Length: 273
Length: 297
Image 1 (tube, chains in turn blue, green):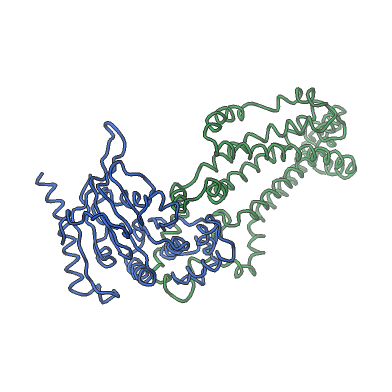
Image 2 (cartoon, one colour; image 1 turned 90 degrees about the vertical axis):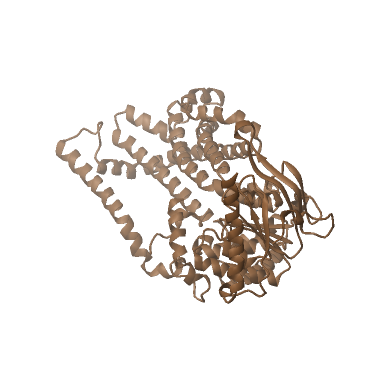
């Protein structure tokens, strides 16, 4: 375990994501809510990072800040040595939300092609890329189905294929498996890890499941209650490739316990102050 | 939405089985091809009660008017109406055709302007705020009352005067409904488009317009009926004689009520045809819509 201070990044180029003293406050006056305070972090290319913390700790807000869906009220963010806005315009991000948000009027393949169409790819390039992405998520045979004909897990895999269709360098995932049952969820985690190893993606993954965070990540960032701060950084150090045996290894349990204790410490701190 | 939520919940139960297996999930996949052998009789079964009810009403109508000796100026017998309809078919269909031209012309003009206004409304917030209260108020005004004025403005003998009335009647429901559809978009879809750095034009094309289609078609169904009503009522205020409105008035003035009813029958046939054509167009344009999915298990 590292102390929060040691996360403060030295100024250097070539990092995927750098945050310096990032804060976010919503509203004004009596309705003012400070969601995030003094977030410092640096993520190297190819890392798998999880953000975990109690509800309302601002982990989703932090992800949205990185993805330029909202802007910080203090501090600075850099994504691929650019500001997040420029990174979004350069299509550096793929995003997957808790809801698959597939468009009902498009087939599976056409949903995957949506970003490519928006970006002006020609139709043969779109079709090739979509087929490639559907193979990656193992849904090639469902290309002509409509989203509502698929199960929740399959829909979420289409959403992942869509997010990766334009080959972004970063994949931002906001509780993507939160609506799935436990077993589907474990299969999906395996899928995401496989995709991550087959590509050179940097993944930032928001979750409130401790085992999920430990199983997937290189590092787990534990966030405190509002205003959200990074309270702990836990290196999982589990060997790759991770599979069903990983889930039964003592190291895995030890890391889960470590994250759980970090989260419990937050509650104790709250009770003592 | 709730129907769909339930569907999703149901599918989650089969998730584990379906997510990684070789065979497509049986519960989730609706295979239209396989249902065709039974489809014809299923359809007959679905429409049979309505068809029976229709004939029952006609038979009762005929029987009661005969048994009670109802005068034809109160309610003619269906057989009388049908006889006149066949006897005067040439005159009635010629009148119906002219009325249809007015209704269709106004329908097309009103719908086009309504859609353009809706797009402008959504594209520019200022237009939206300036126009919507006015449009909603105008929608409650009985625009048909303008018919005599339109006759005076645009030459009573020209079908254009009738088309203008029809267009004005059709415009508001189309504009208001389409605008609502364009604005009723899942914020998550907007964020998704934002993550691709989409242009406003792409958001309009990919998200807003498909969302507006169901609203647009509901408006068209209302507008289709309104356009015939407006055309016929506008004809009552004068103009060329060879139209349904004048035919009905003239025959009624001559106490030839079965004849007047025969013209009303023609107007009904036009109205129903119009409605069915809109239904077919709706199915062709948005086959993906929830309301067209099979509900059979």
